[in-house]
Length: 91
View 1 (cartoon, one colour):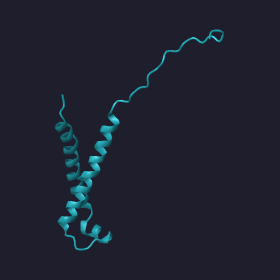
View 2 (tube, rainbow, N blue to C red):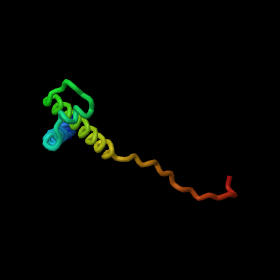
View 3 (tube, helix red, strand yellow):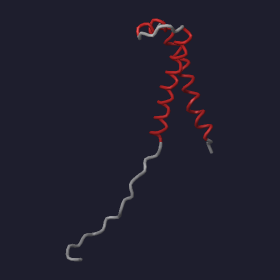
């Protein structure tokens, strides 16, 4: 039986790894200070932009994993009533 801690770890650990990889890739392509400057943020250092980007990616990946877990739940099927023969002469 899978415990709650294992469920949480299986949710957060892959999200963490994807956020780390995404931060490396995005920081290689884009300069984080240039993005902060375009957004009008001043007084932030490069390390701060890396951290904010990492946590933003981690939260997005976690939300994606949560939605996957939500949609993996079994669908409750409605109770089907047996069809009875209808006789209009019978009350």
